[in-house]
Image (cartoon, rainbow, N blue to C red; front, side, top):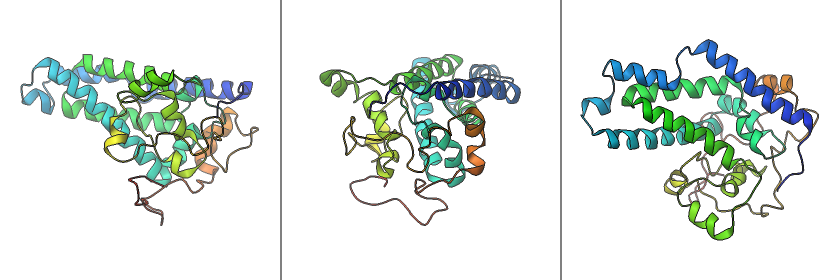
Length: 256
């Protein structure tokens, strides 16, 4: 559903989270992802450096593998109830626009950055790869959360490579099988290869409802409420494994 203009307090809350996230990251992580990559380069750390892989290959492999790790991380945040509590902050947005792509709990941002740093050190990803990946991640997060649709032919072609707004919008449906699909951030390959791809919402983009079915109160969109949500919010029926009785639903390769 292409939502109406979001309430001012939702925008304030989403952008307020960006400020909080930035402060938390700077306090907890003195080095940026590029800084960690520079450290690995200076000390000759990482698997790719030990294999003496040519730089263009190292660059491409590093960016693709980092994107794959983010796909797996996203999957895990939907599977583990404790992690889903953090990720609910992103999905509880009742509108779908550019600011939704910035709306993450600071603890989730910190965990994600720590994971990315670990992968960079393990691979020995070059600083340029870290820079390119961060640019792609931030750029595509804004792109695929855009409340827009590409022309049909362009959408069909683009979706084979990149996650498009229409593809990612399905992920923000209140319907559990649709929420637990289309986990990719940048490259759309992983959802297709691993059976989590869903072409479109059952009700169509104009008929689908955005958000979570148990968190539809617009008065609960303030910055303090979002920061406290992981501690007090019901997880609903969304987590699909690792601590819940419900497991992956087998059938058509989808997570339900």
